[in-house]
Length: 66
Image 1 (cartoon, helix red, strand yellow):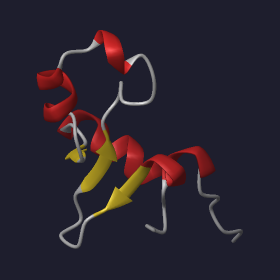
Image 2: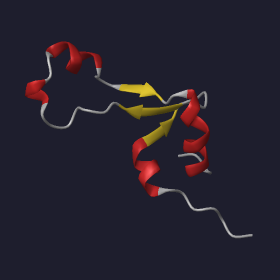
Image 3: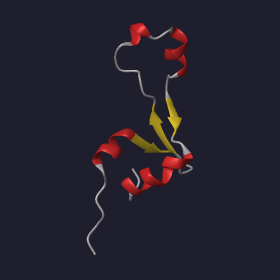
Image 4: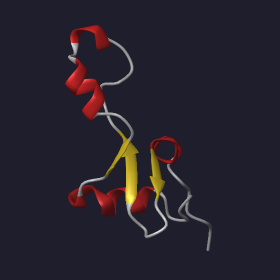
């Protein structure tokens, strides 16, 4: 059987934690930050977990993990 291919776009956007959860960077932090207030920028710092509804899709895109 041929190997399954990893979706490279997903590999660049998602990482797995040691317990198997999927994390991602938050949106809206690249440009146009002057129009956002400090609370928005501060609360969107770091990474967050992927929603439960989307975890199965992300794991399908990354069959061998990272």
